[in-house]
Length: 127
Image (cartoon, rainbow, N blue to C red; front, side, top):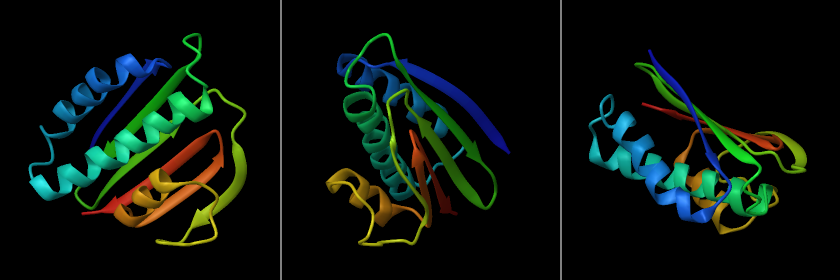
């Protein structure tokens, strides 16, 4: 199992460098280019949502990211310091009843499990 945690200040100017560092670490473990593309999309959307919508680009707040990779799955948890959204509990893949826009719809289409609760979203993609 491979795990790590990281955080970024809520400034959109930091996102590209932060996400690249995350992907560099993940690509040491996962080498499938199609899978890496999906993971990049998942991280970009979730972390960007946390910075922009959750923390309202308030640099005194951070977005925390936990990544766990095993032989069977990729799991990511993204947590911001905003007010959060209504707890939706487990979300069935491609469910149409979750609040949110295109970003969350893209993430839902890439993962097998997704749970949103207040200011935390956890996603699982089976490998």
